[in-house]
Image 1 (tube, helix red, strand yellow):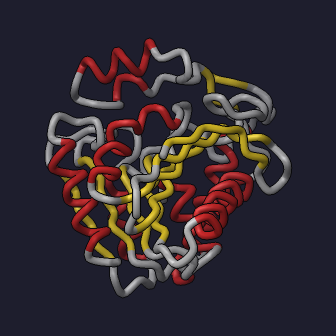
Image 2 (cartoon, one colour):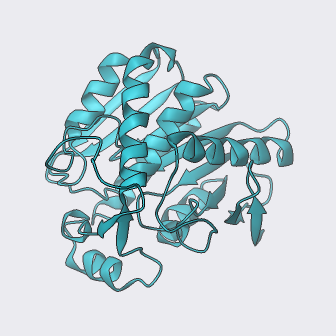
Length: 268
């Protein structure tokens, strides 16, 4: 079953949502996309998860893709976290008794780890890909950025996205990939990371942290430091040699998705 709709989030902001659920799913995975992108870039991952018996819920972050909201802007990091919570609640309500997992990439990885810190024990487990959990590769200059929240700077993420030039070109040509980033969003991420660092011991969920060694956008040190700081007893960290930021779009993605599926299956 596939369904697309606009769903009002916790504060009424309408977010574009899609669910792809096979017959008799064994669990639901809520997929959370990264900065400037949209849920459509996770069609391949969704297809693979569906084939393995997992239902997938996806949404466009507010201000991204087809969702409402000021473009690529957060007033506060809790907006991002509570949007995730809204869809976790929806997944649980619509699939009573089924385990619910989170899979977040980059800024989505920040969202799901913030979620696990703010709402521990609410999901069966959390998987991250190139997650922003520290600021080891932060933009040059002081943080937070001392400019108006509604100032924007260009999205220059493309070059570091993937080692596959075709993926980079598709990213740059994608009309739903946002071309500018607000100071407000970047500062919200900064404050979110600072809060997460201070509250690391509240994170107790099973977690699989995946990162490309050659990630030029989010340093793999983020995942290593997060791994060391959190209180989870079930935690796994894997750094992939040679891979860039979007490990789920690298040429070896099938192998990585298979590892994710294996990890999920072992926690059902």
